[in-house]
Amino acid sequence: MAYRCPMGCEGSASNKPGKCPVCEMELERNPGYKPAAGTAATDSL
Image (cartoon, rainbow, N blue to C red; front, top):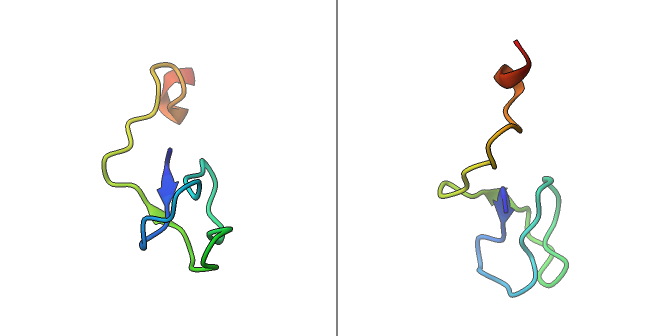
């Protein structure tokens, strides 16, 4: 998932920014996230 809770709450990972459903902290970008092939915006150029 592209976003995750900084506290590592289970079930908080998401593909969209927002708040953790468990602890209500803002989700942060997951530095290890790699989008699937064919989903990058530059693929359509």
